Amino acid sequence: MARRGLLLHWRGASDEHPVVLMAHQDVVPVVPEEWTGDPFSGDVRDGAVWGRGTLDDKGSLTVLLEAVESLLGEGFVPAHDVWLSLGDDEEVAGTSAGAAVARLRGLGVRPWLVLDEGGAVVTGAFPGVEAPVAVVGVTEKGILDVEISTSAAGGHASTPERGGATWRLARAITRLESRPFPPAMTGPVLEMVDGLGRHSSRSLRPLFAFAAPLAPVLARVFTRVSPETNAMVRTTVVATMLQGAPGANVVATSARANLNIRIAPGETVASVVQRLRRVVDDEEVELRVVASSEPSPVSPTDGPQFGLVRAAVAAAYPEALVTPYVMLGASDARHFTAIAEHVYRFSPFAMTREQRETLHGTDEHVTVDALGRGVVFYRALLRGLGAA
Image (tube, rainbow, N blue to C red):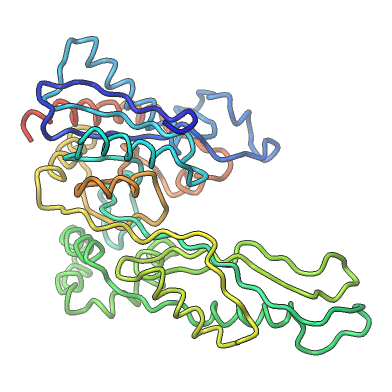
């Protein structure tokens, strides 16, 4: 394995239909003074565990291992081989998951089911639906980092020329902001709307009942509901890093920015770059692909694999509705689509909107109740392998 990633093999009664369960050990950095407590204390208060990684992703790591350990203590043998892939560098798009895939491929292992972090049990995320909803990622958006840059004559800031490098860069970014990618209802989003729409308020139910023919209208509505729903239906572009002159009184000879782009299913790296060039429409502005990955294939929802995940959710959260969705971020799971058709993304925790906003933010925490339910989820999943 690369660096400190772990790939553990739990032999089952059969080596057919092996299962891979995933979590990652690493976390993103913190600014300690922005937290109300020690971000690495794991402090238990107000019915929750507080600290970096409690949601992303050491909470899932902990409940997964607790479920496995408790079943081992009972003498339980899974019906099929179980592999635990515990990466150490997911947050920096590292190599551990790819190394695990290479190892499994070398051993001739083709997973029947792969489950990694991703969706959660949420409330208030879908219009008109009051019940908690367990969103299970069946695909994830691609990632593309593009450096956009331009150059011009420099000089002293007291005698600037019109149309310098920073001005031209700002114009290019503004054009991209004012002309976002068109929205579209992809298959997983339509399935989510159709399924959850049946449980929405009486006034909205007729609208969602005609999700397919009204897809263009619904896609435009989704762009206005929230940043999350907007990101579900289109490729997004944001400038994340900017660089210009080295001093306050210096006219920049070059200016550059990083565009972080999340590619919606149906688009490709090539089609996105082509559209960026067309929208920028300036030969003096260069675009250079820094890093890229295509959107993941969409995993089926009509087979026993998704049914097993659904049943495990029901064991832990019997009141929750289960739906597929497009995962907006990236996970190690995308590497496993090279060797598995059924790859899903779900963290077995109930999360409020406020909690979701602490992911990569401050005061990240998971409730003790959610941790307990997470153990129930994984135990049900592992015990259900024999019936799947």
